[in-house]
Structures are given as C-alpha cells and as structure tokens.
Image 1: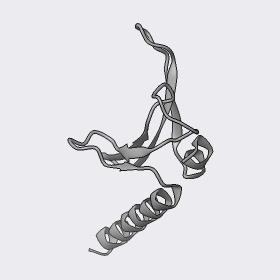
Image 2: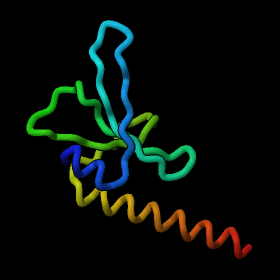
Image 3: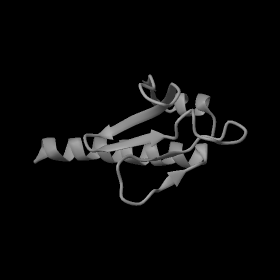
Amino acid sequence: MTEKQILELGFQINYDDGGGDWDKYHYYTLEIVNGLELISNASDEPRKDDEWYVEFFDTYDKLRIYDYKDLKQLIEILEKAKRKTAEYVKIK
C-alpha cells in the first residue's frame, strides 16, 4: 500500500521531531471510535517499494493489513457499524 492510498482513506499525518538519537519521521492514524484507532508504520522503518501497512493501535498482538482493498473494506465495515450503533442508541 502507498502513502497516497493511506491518505485517500482519511488517515491523518503525524510527525515526530526526533528529540533523541533518531531522525524525524512521520506516520498516519485514523480513529474509528474512542479507543479504536488504526496506525501505519513509520516513515523511518525499513520497507521496499513504498510498502506501507496499517495495524490496530495498542494491541497485545500485531494484526497488520498490507492490502489497500482489504483496509478500505475494513474501514467501511467499521464505519457502518458505528452509524448503526448510533442509530440504535438513539432509538432506545
């Protein structure tokens, strides 16, 4: 997956200025709901051919998504669930 594809899905860019013995880098995040966030690998991590991935933030085990179409479908499912939940809560 490319950086451009990550941005197309609505991810926000985040910068880390280094501040220590490492260089500046950036990464991307997308908050689905409070406590459920997706995060990309960082720009300073080794990868080939602009190979970016996204994983769920702050989980014990890594669950990475490398394919743009899979990630897009996952986000659509989560957004639909978020809308349906909001509708259901209003009805109750």
